[in-house]
Image 1: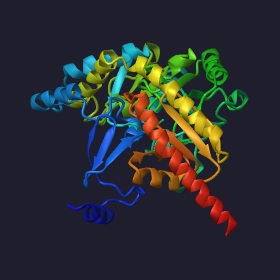
Image 2: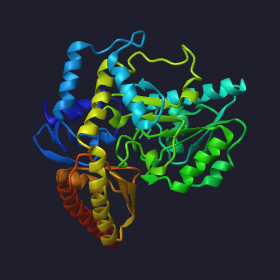
Image 3: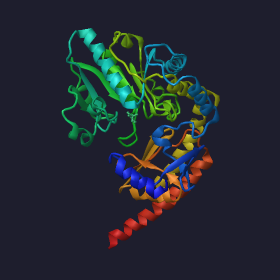
Image 4: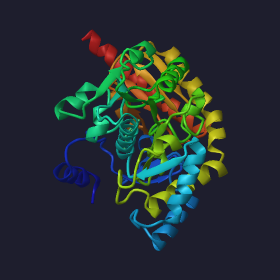
Length: 406
Ligand SMILES: *Cc1c(COP(=O)(O)O)cnc(C)c1O
């Protein structure tokens, strides 16, 4: 199928929930993607923080191919070895005690909400628990996850949603305190807000929230679906802050391209689930968990964390350079290989121009460019990206100036 034909067909058969970029991607290698017409793109999006190890890692692909020939799925009515191994590695890397595998991030969030509610229910024998979430947070599109997502526009058309949710101001500890009641079962937040515009939590805030939780036996749920798995320079971003959640959610880079998510918890919390309280048909299947297991192995073999710690300051320095060069860039923020530039105007024209020049970038809110490269990028890739981006910003800025004059 030709490129145009594919796009036209997609507009007919797929539900129209995405404004897709006019590219039909076909294959990937390292940090580059290729479309059907053979054009090459330097990828600074990683399929939204998924391809931490880049594309076409032979060891990873080989492990998956081997597992395909053995067994793809067992259901959770039986044991399977890859799931046990993967759970052990995730538990060890996160300091959590028990793991439940899901097929997506949203499902991991659903499980985390259920576990927090069950913990509260067992403790107080009451079914009136509440959750505190943050403004501008993003936790997924299913009804439960949407209910705790802090963007009203995403929620409004789908009301009535799950009740008992209150929204605090991110990085404002007093606003969290003000919402705590005897019904508060959990506080959920992303250590680095992704979709909401690349806002890292301050140390004071996240530590303050942890302290409030400890004092009142409220569960701290950290959503590391986007900021986890090495992106911050630590395996999980909370390790940067010196805090520890009661429940952790992971997905995206957890499978590096294979659909898988997980929620993990401390023993005393995980104990709240009784037999039959939660389930999934596909979750934790041997194919997806082979991917998870291999991802952890490769992170170690390729010393991904050490690499991120080396290359991220370089990316930061270069983005800071653009921030100082252009008045139209109003902020530069982020941690590790999860950074953003905020502009005085929408960034969609910059993204289109970059794409025409072979660079894939995405946004996080209309005015924020989001940088989520594969974790294996080198300084040379950063330079390549910055050169293209610099040209695109200059062009768009000049076009905007001309429009202002007319
Ligand atoms: C992407 C994302 C989700 C939802 O994950 P899906 O796999 O798309 O369901 C939840 N939380 C955060 C922080 C995310 O970035």
